[in-house]
Image: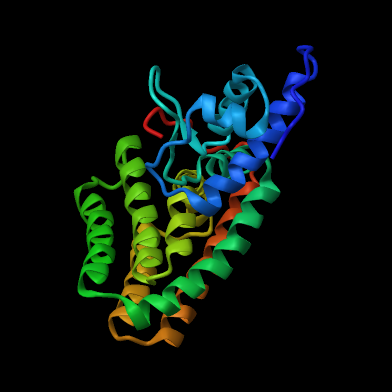
Length: 259
C-alpha cells in the first residue's frame, strides 16, 4: 500500500490519519494484545511515507486506546478497555436526566439477559462472586448505625455494582462482562441518585437487599425465567426511584474523590 506523503504540515494529518485507519484494521484483524507494531522504518516503507507521518499515526492510535507508547520501545497493542464508553456514560448520567432513563433501558436489555444466562451457566466460582458482593452490601448495612455515612454509602454502591457485574461475568458471555466493567462508574453514579428516589418513595436499603437476594436465589436454583423476572422487577423499581429523584431538581450525584 502506498500513501502519498504531503510535504506541508497541513497535509501531514491527512496522511497520518489514513495510515492510522489502516493500522487500526491491522491491529483488530491480525495483532493480539501485547504484541508490538512493526518498526517506524518498516511502516514508513510499507506506506511510502516519512517516519514523522508514521509517528503521528501511531499517536492517533494511542489516542484511541489501541496502542501503548513507551520511550525507546515499539508501540504495543493494548488490551481493549471501555474507557471512552465509560466517560460517555458517566457524562450523560451526571448532566442529562434523560441519560439516566436511557441507561436503565439498556440495563433492562442487558441484565435480564445476563441473569437468564447466569442461571444456566454460572459456575460455583461465579455464584460465589455474586454472593460475596451481596454479603458486602449486607455487612455495611449491619455496621451502619441507622444512617449510612458517606463512606459507607460509597462502599455499599460499589458492592452493588459488583453484584451486577458478577452476574454478567457468570453469564459466560465475554461481551456482557466487558460492558459491565465499562459501566461500573456510571452505574455507581446512578445508584446514588436512585437511592434518593428510593427513600422518597418510602423504601429502605433492606428492600434493595431483598431484591438482590431474590435474583441470587433464582440464579442458584438454575431458573433462567425466574432470574429474568426478578431482575426485570428490580430494574423497573430502580426506574421508578430515578424518576422520583429527578423530579427533585436539587438532586445531584455526589462527586466522590474515590471514583
